[in-house]
Length: 88
Image (cartoon, rainbow, N blue to C red; front, side, top):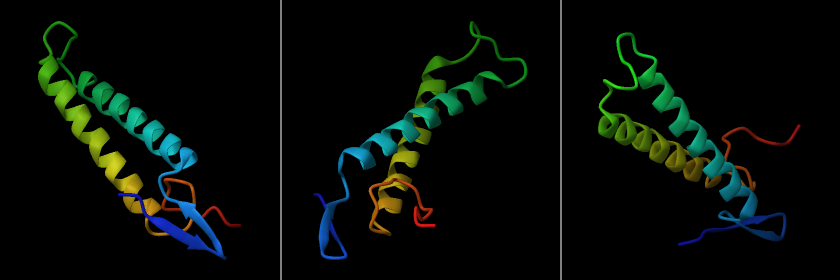
């Protein structure tokens, strides 16, 4: 379901190209950061890590990031996935 946000007489689709690009980029970065954080734990090596746990933990972090982007996009009329206002 797509939400239409009215902004000064102009309708914007919350799930437009820029919003999706921002949200997916953040989710990918979050996935990589979570995976690297798990690998950085002292005593864990590439050969001894439980890869299923690493990938599932990183996927959950990525999903949370995506949900936060959707929540941020629904709080304001912007094509960004950020909670911060882009107005100066």
